Amino acid sequence: MDKIKPALVPAVLLWLSFLVSVTRGYAATSDVLYVQDGHNLVTYAVNYKSVTKLGALYINASPDYPIQIFHAPSAPFLYILGFTSANEEYFWAHATTPQGVPTENPIQKFAVKPSLTQFLFHPNGNFAYALYSWTDQNGEYVGDVVLYKVDPQTGMLTNTHQPVANFPPNFFWQTFLYGMNSTGTKLYTRAYVNFRDSNGNDFYYYTIDPKTGLLGPQVYFWQDDAGTLGAVSSDISNQFIALDFNYYDGPVGINLFTNKVYPTDTTPTPLIACDATMLAVCGDSSSTQFSPAGKYLFVNDYTIQSVVVLDIDLNDKLLKETGSSIPGNPSILSFSPDGEFVYAVEDKNVLVYDFNRASGLLTAQRTINFPLTVGGIAATSHP
Image 1 (tube, rainbow, N blue to C red):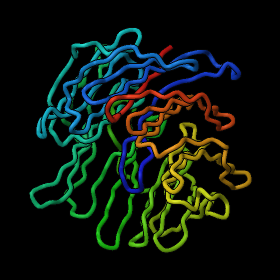
Image 2 (image 1 turned 90 degrees about the vertical axis):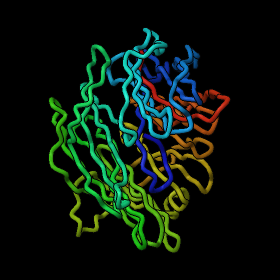
Image 3 (image 1 turned 180 degrees about the vertical axis):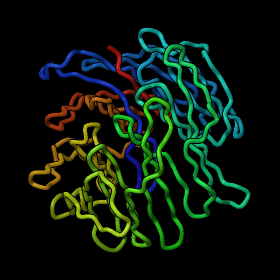
C-alpha cells in the first residue's frame, strides 16, 4: 500500500528496504533507491554510512503526467508506468545491473489503456493487480481490478485481461486500491465519497489466492465519515486501524482500533483515544502512517509542520512521543520493508534517516538534492 497524505487523498503506499547500525548487531546490507526527477530516474546506493549515486536513466514518460516506479519484489527488474501524452500510457520494464542500476534499453514496452491508475505487485512476485478507473458517459465512476502475471525469471508482464473485482457505475462513490497486508493474504480497497453532507470512506478487503491471484468475495470492514463537520482519514496496518479526525467545530484527535471487521451498525471502542490532553500533536490537524511493523505511528502534523513519531503503548493505552521528528510535511514518506530506513520527500529533496525500531529514534539524516521537484521514489534491498 505508500505516503503520509492529507485527509481523504487516496494513495498507494510505497514499501522500500534496509539500514543497519553497528550497535544493533544486524548484518550490513544496503538499499538501492530510485528517485524520479523530471525525465531522469536516478539510482543511489544507501547504507548506514553513505548515499552514493550509481547512475541515471532518461525515461520517456512525461513528467507532466503521473509516473509510477516499481521494483519487482524479489527479482532484478524495474518497472515504469507513465504517459507520453494525455491519451497514451505505457509500461516499460528494465533489467538491472548487479548494483541495481536499470539498463538503458527496456526489455519490454507495451501500451495500456490510459485509465490504468494504480498497480500493486503481490509480495510473492508472481502476479500484480491493476486498477482501471474512469467515468462513463453519464459521469459515473467505474472501475475494474485486472490481474497481471509476472515472470520472475524474465521480468515480463502479461495482462490477463481478467477482471478479478469490479466497481459498477456510481455517481457518488469512487473506489481505489488501498494496498495489501504484509503477507499478501488480503487486498484492501477504499471507496470515497465527497458529496453534500457526506465526507467519508468505506474500506473493504478481498482474500487473495496465493497460487492464482484470484480474489474472494468483497468484505466490508471499516468506515469513517465526518459529514459536513470536518474530515477524517484512516491508516491500516496488520494489527491496527488509526482514525485521524479533524473537525471544523469540535474535538480533534487520533483513535487506534484493532484491525478487524466491524458491523456497520456498531460504534467501535478505540484501544487508544488520543486528544490534546494526552498529546498536543493529537489535537492538531494531521494525518497518520504506521511503521512497517506497526509499533510506531508517524503523524504528519500540519499545524506545527513536522512529522512526529509516536510509540504505541497498549499496556498503558497511550500514544507517547519518542522524541524524534522530521521537519516539514513530506509529500511522500516511505520505509524499508524491515523499517530500518525512512525516506521523506520534500519538494526537491529526499531526506534519508536511520530508524531504530527498538527506540523509535531517527538518526543520521542525509539529504539528496535535485534540480526539479521529486515525482516519486522506490527502493529495494540489496545484499
